[in-house]
Amino acid sequence: MIGGNFVRNSIDIGVSIAILAGIACGQPADNVSESTSQDPPVAGATLDQQIKQFYPPQSEIPITFSSTELEESTTLRTQQGIVQILPNGLLQYYDALAARGFPQLPDGVSDLTITSVETQYYLPPQKDLEQKIQTAQNTIDHLKAYLSDSDLKFSEVEFVVAQSSSEVKEGIKFRNEGAAIDEVAIYPVQQFQDIVEIKGEVKYGNQILPLEMTLIVHGPLGQFSKKTHLTGGKGEYTVDFLYGGILWNLKGPQQSVLETPALEYLHSTVAPFARGHAQQLMQRASTGTEAIDAIDRSDLLDEYVVHGLGRAWFEQLNTDWQLGYDMDSLKKQNRVSNWWHDENVDKMARYIAKVSPAAVIRMYQNSPEQLIAESGLKMR
Image 1 (cartoon, rainbow, N blue to C red):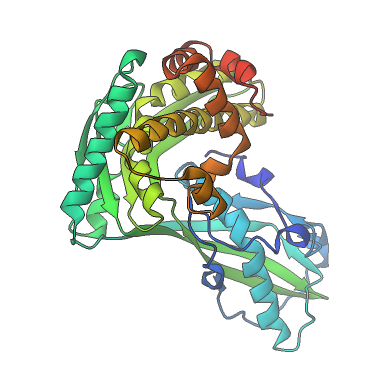
Image 2 (spheres, rainbow, N blue to C red; image 1 turned 180 degrees about the horizontal axis):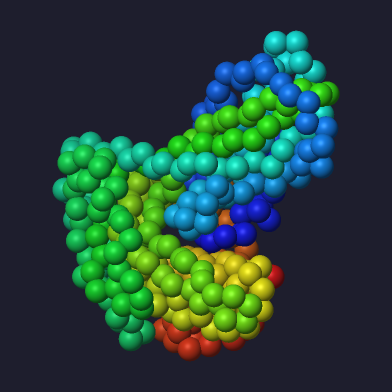
């Protein structure tokens, strides 16, 4: 997402300590130990004149990026993952200082700055990979047939088996600009994760200590690469879109791995509608905050539409292919993506059942705000 959005996602240690897992669709919450802090140096300086820069350690602490470019290239999922993991990372840092004789909590914490986000990709094992890719292609073909009366323009799809992580990184770069996506590449990976570097300062009495942390945010089961870039000024904001490839994470619950390629492909297919919605909302924005809110609103509706349609489609796939998935049981076991638990996706799925998938797609293209109202979505 883009400048200013992340500063509103401040963290609150007092209420967020229990939320420790990395963000991933359907992934078990077993990655708490992977948020780490570097060995904290013991050095200080008296900076009483800067006391207003520090916040109580159990209050909300603003987080910003070191540059607009870095924020624009960091996905919303990764931003949410940082907010989720960071409280535990800070507590580890405080514990390390307490072991050296400092109080259990500092007197204050400065604004935190994200200085680097690097994605690591792990290649999938070759065993049965060709069969998995063929199954994924078949699910996409089934989705296209399911939505054949919607007048969607389906792009060509290619599955790329990369020989190195650098090939994946190069392959998913943002290349498609504007409204049209004629071809999309899908890269199977065993998993991917973002390595996030964060810097700040903590205050113990008159001592100011540098804070440096490394967080690991696990990627979701799938990700269509999309980048937004906001330009302009008051009353004249514009947003540009760049699109890249699709990551398909093969490490996850079986049902989630099965549905992911088709759903990410659907994200790429309706991307022009999400772009149009954002540009409509941008015309009403008179401040930077309102412009950012417009893009957030467009992104969220995109998720609700795709995953609402995805539910209806997967139920049909489950029947047609006689897969035997009991989705209610899988939801209770938390062996589905987070979107199967989302209240707004529930609402969208019910609305789709009422009016048809094609009707929802046409409304999404032509009257997205009407779609929000008629489906009963709760959006700010």
